[in-house]
Amino acid sequence: MSDIKLNERNMQYEEIIAKSKNGMAVLFMNIVLMLASIACFIWGITIADSGERVALGVVLIVSGALYSFLIGPILFAGLKVLKPNEALVLTLFGKYYGTLKGEGFFFVNPFVTATNPAAASSVSTGTIVDENAAVMTAKATAQLSSMSAFMNKKISLKAMTLNNEKQKINDQLGNPVIIGVVVIWRIVNTAKAVFNVDNYKEYLSIQCDSALRNTVRFYPYDTSLEDENEKSLRGSSTEVAEKIKQELQSKVDIAGLEIIEARITHLAYAPEIASAMLQRQQATAIIDARQKIVEGAVGMVEMALAKLSENNVVELDEERKAAMVSNLLVVLCGNKDAQPIVNSGSLY
Image 1 (cartoon, rainbow, N blue to C red):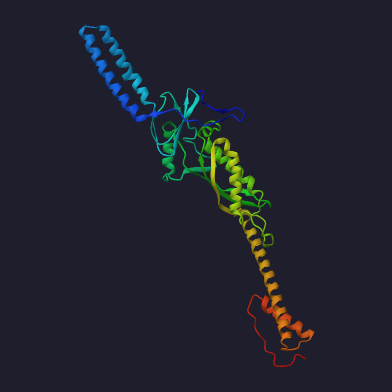
Image 2: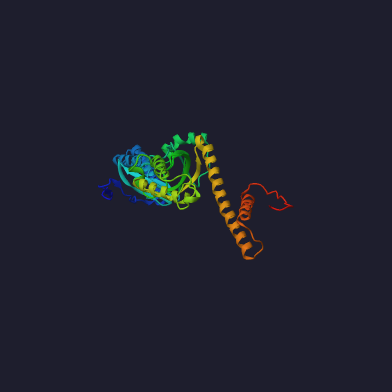
């Protein structure tokens, strides 16, 4: 146990590699010794029954029975099989023994036990799924959860996904918005994940909710065209997701987790203000569009008057210029096509 490295300041376990041997060699050797011990047990019974060298027979019987029925089965308990990207956190009489990593067949101390508090847990605010796992129905998951608590103590080192539920959060302006995120994560320190927090899956889900709320409240849902440089949830989703990732990473370091990526999967106004905010967006869009139309129309009128004066096409007094400007603005800024009126007489 002297290999255990414990940061006394932060009380965080550091991961160490568990001592192990080739499992196939130990398995073969144990089977051979068990067969030999059974042979010794039978031979001892034969010698003891013959009445010759009774003491030797008793020794053979005791040693054969001891290894065949006690030592041999105990050694089988130390055999462990790991698939790629799997690990076992082992404890020996309550103390951290080490982490077994790497694919293959291993033999470790048969008295160690594997620990994984999140083996059969259900996450309250999100759903943890493995990216490469098959989709299981809720009924099958419920039936297997109780069995996995006892049978599956392995910790997956693969990239996994936290599908966080949609939440109602107030943005910077106080408007309630519905937002959901997905987080890609993995375990990088198995000792911290098992010993520093009670359940690393639930811990991650709760911290994800907290990071999401702390980040969203600093951004408005959307910005007007006048504030194009201002960040918003809708217009700067990538930057907002990066902020969520950074804050979440700072919270889950104690649990030995790495946040690979965070992305916003759903963003909308809350139902109680959705219709009002839609009308507001429509009004803002109409105003912005009218402003652009008026600016363009004024420019076109100025250009028309300048061209007429420059080419000496017609000489217009101030009253005729005003009438021409009025007609051009009505035609350019109107919502419908203009209906021309032909004047056959004089203006005066």
